[in-house]
Image 1 (cartoon, rainbow over the protein chains, first blue to last red):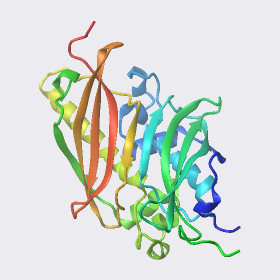
Image 2: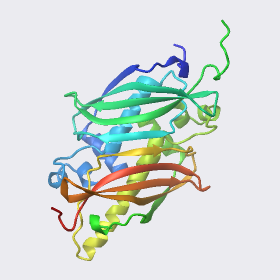
Image 3: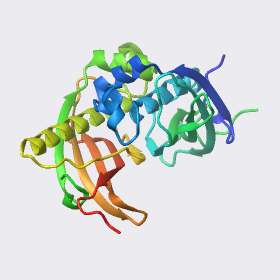
Length: 156
Length: 160
């Protein structure tokens, strides 16, 4: 399969990836390393929190979204990283036993104003649980290499 | 910096630093961001980055850990003094996250937290919204991470 470049994407392209099962062990392991709050770490302590019951760190959901983005979209592309993320919204708690799928839509494509060899792809990505409820929504920009530098005409 | 009323716009706290070693960069990437320039020195050297770099989410996740640890230290100090600890969270999200330059294996990132806005909420008398900018700066003084986060913080005096 040829490597997909900036020129190969279209606005409106939709990608689905997953599911990934979020276990209680995974929630606790991620929390222990990166977000050691009782609501994420300990099913018992979570009973007294503002949001009732243990749930995954929002950053954990974001990292799982990244994993599905790589598995379902970035493999076999010449992806060159990301300058940043416009917005992330946490919409519902992710619980132990939830199965998450990623739904991504390409919403904009624009050439780099300063570099002829790359272009920017803006996407809206959503993680949904087994009931189809969105738990996290993100608008991010990805950098892809161009097959041919901008402004160079293709020989017919 | 406890209840909503105690916060001041412009207040800045250095929350800690972290050196990103090659092994942990690869371990994180294997789990959450398996792209060649996060996983393999040789492939990374051939990429436009020119060397192994940390996943941007790794940079962000380490910032989160340092923030949580700093908050726990501050709350422990308040409890030691016999003061009530304000409830915070959950975070509704974040915006304007930027990775202006890569974090290379061996780089040390210093993280800071600065309050940029304190917004009373018309429909919530018990909490206010604190907007803060978290940043990461490498050992050369270059910005590698910046994000605006929003957090609900309990008020000392309930409104309305």
